[in-house]
Every structure is written in C-alpha cells, then in structure tokens.
Image (cartoon, rainbow, N blue to C red; front, side, top):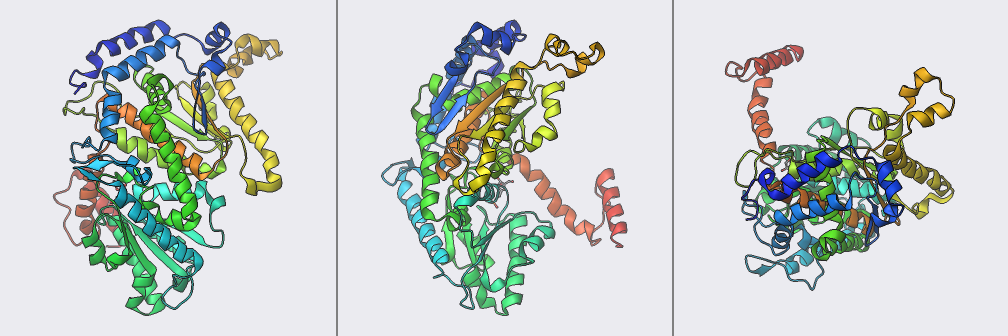
Length: 546
Ligand code: F6P
C-alpha cells in the first residue's frame, strides 16, 4: 500500500513543510489584492452546494502540493477500494459501505461476491411500509389507539444522526406527532422523555447495531417496564417496541419479535449508519418520500466524490485544507458554525463522525504517528456563538479554522419571520469577512480611537474559513452536506494513514465502568483499585449513605 513510507518522510510532505515555512506569514489581504478574481476562482460547486474557499491561507501552489500529497498517499485508490466493497476496515475485517445505503435500486455493489443493494432496498421498502402504517394510524397501540409519540432509544451513531436530521428537517415532519430521542444512561433522559406521554400512544424504536450497548439496553428495559406497568400487560410490548439492529439473537432475547426488527449489516459503521434502518424514526417523522430525497442527496455527493477530478472534488478539497491547518499550522481545533437554527445538532453529529473516525494515533502498520491526526470539532449555530466565543476566534491567540454554513432561502414555513433571513446571512458573510481581513491599527486609529485603545480594537485577521452556501435546507441538501463531511473525513484518514473505521478507543472506559458499578453499591471491595479511583468511590458511597 502507498502508505508503507511514513507520511512525514514522503517527498510530498517535505515539500509542503518547506512551502509552509516560506508562506506562513502571507496575508489574506495581500492574496486578495494580488488576485481580484480570487473570490470566484477559489469556489467550487457540487449539486446544491457552493463552497467559497478563497479565505484560506493557500495559493495555487499550496493546493497543487496538497493534491500531490493526496496522490502519493493513494487517496483515490482507497476511495475506489471503499466503493468496491473491499475490507478497508482491516482491524475489524469489514467492508466500509455506507455508500451502498443510498445507492439506487439498479446499482451493483458487492461484498464477498454478493450484491448488497437488493437487501438494502428490501429493508428500505419495509421501513417505508411500517412508517406509512404508523403515519396513517393503521398501526395501532395495544389498546387500539393510534401512535402519537415515537421515542428512539439509542446512543452514538444510533442516536446522533436521526436526532440531528429530525431537528434539521422538522419543518418537513409530521407536526401532529411527538418525536423524542433518548440516549443517556442518566435516568433523567428517559424520565424527561416519557413524563408527559401516554403509553397507549407511544412507540419505542430501540436502535442499536450490536444490541448490547449498556446505555441502550438499560433505557430500553426501563421503557418496557414503564409501558407494561402503564398498560398492565406484557403482551403490549409487541405493538409498542420495534428494533433496529444487526443482531437478531439479542433482539429476540430482549423480547422484541424479530418480525418487527429492521436490519442492517456489519459493513455499516455506527457513525455512518443514520441512512440505514437506524433512520427509522426519521422515516416515520418525514415520510418515506422525504427520506428517499435525503438518500438521493447523499448519493449525489457520493457520485461527486467518486468521479470528480481532485482539483474539483469538494470532499478532497476540504480534507486537504484541514490537513494543511492541522499538520502545518498546528491548529488543534476546527469549528463548524451553521447559520441555521435547524442545524443545532449538526456539530454534535460531526463530532462523532470526525473524532471517532480520525481520533487515532497509530498508522495502519501499527506504528505511532509522528504527525497530528483528527482535530477537535466544535461549534454551535450562528448567531449565538458570536455573543459567546467568537471573541477568541477574532482576537485570541489560537488559530481556529472554521466552516460557515448558510442557506440562500429560509424554509417556507417561516412566513413573516423569513424577513429576518437577510440579517442572519449578513452576519454569516460579515464574520468570514472580519476573520479574514480584520482591521488594522491604522484603520482603527483613523476612526479617532485614542492611541492607548488601538491595540485592543485591532483585529489581526488572516483567520481561515470556508463558506458553504446551499439553496435551502431540504432533505436532499442535508444528505449532500453529511456525505460531504463523511468523505472529507475519509480523505484525511487516508492521508494520515490511519484506520478511520474502527473505534477501539471507546472500549476501555466501557469495561472499567462495568467493573466499577458493583463497587459503587458497596457490594464489592475497593482494595484493588488505584488510589484516586478508590478514594472517589469511597467518597461517593459516603455521600450516598452507603
Ligand atoms: O461509542 C461506541 C459505539 O460503538 C459507536 O461507534 C456506536 O455508534 C455506538 O457505540 C452505539 O453502538 P450500538 O449501535 O451498537 O448500540
């Protein structure tokens, strides 16, 4: 494989290092002054997305060197291997085929010689049928009442995707029904979700790829108790619980009829799964047609990523820009700032996508990496962040590259409130402008600001952003956006030479929590624990009166 040479020892990396040393002090102001066309020249369009990347600290030469790095690291070869169903998640011996989840019915994508597309569509059809039954009132609860409330129980990839997409697309959802998402093992989450619901009208979707995740099984067990005690009959479970999983045995063991189970496959990673059956709650909320539009949006971006040449390939471009800041400028974090209230959960979703994928520190050969890998992803919707942490983005000591995301048209339902949209978007454009170009001391002084205050009111600028502008937040556009970030993360993992598809880093904490739980009740001794944990457990017991 092309990553057998260590990344930092490749000629392309060394060339980028030299280029960085030569250009690190270049100013966006100068780059724009030298090239009046930069704003339109450094823009790319794919599907409904327009990306302005002109406010990055790059030149044609930087981009060329970055593309050469991608070529040397075999990014397109790894991409093709993914699309071909090869087992590129080698630590788990699995294919990585979330792209098959949104492939059209007529496509052929094989894993171990078998075309997986028919099975994908068979599940999608069952999901559509089930959603139609719930939405029409044909599927009733145990007492014959229609389902008014849908509660998804899942965590991580079995929660963040549907929850984010439900928020994003709620104006397309069935407003007569209540949709809630429970993930935290803190009983407060389930309590708040159920406290005002009537069990006779409530459907639980238990979403778990493995069906062994302790949070999900614990919450599902408590939800079942709530339902059975509310309706007074164990038999009610069959009408109020459905499962989404790859593990039929565990689903049956839990007591859900596997006829009410919607399956998926081990080649779908948790954080890449919300367009599989994990999106069942979303299909009920939006209806099958809208869900289909979302899948088509994903597919559109998949095709762009698969076929566009590197210089016009959006995920490739965003991935390379991320590597530039992460590895050469030493940026530790990366902000995603959607100027859409409906995208309030978008960054939470991206945190798992990016940080669980690329939060790795050994390469594919198992050697410790000597370069930075995945960034810390954070952010909240604008304009709220402007009145909280943007101060640091503008005048702090840290370089925080950011994506600003906005939509040309407000969603139709806003009515008169759509009048606020220009103000929202003016803020988005202004922030990118201020971050890039700042305000010089001379400009500040020319406004008559007293000399001693000038340094405090000066903005150094030169802070990079991408602006992602889409027509409107539709199901298709959401699909395109998510696939853009999925493939961006892929590109970066390929360059860093890490496995972006496993997540062993979440295991240790799970195992330790399982061992510690009996100690908290006082049932087991703390003698063998490390000093800090032992004293915390003792203190906890005291506070609990144990
Ligand atoms: O946090 C680890 C993880 O395995 C995620 O990758 C996954 O999305 C989540 O747990 C939930 O897993 P499951 O769907 O099997 O319950």
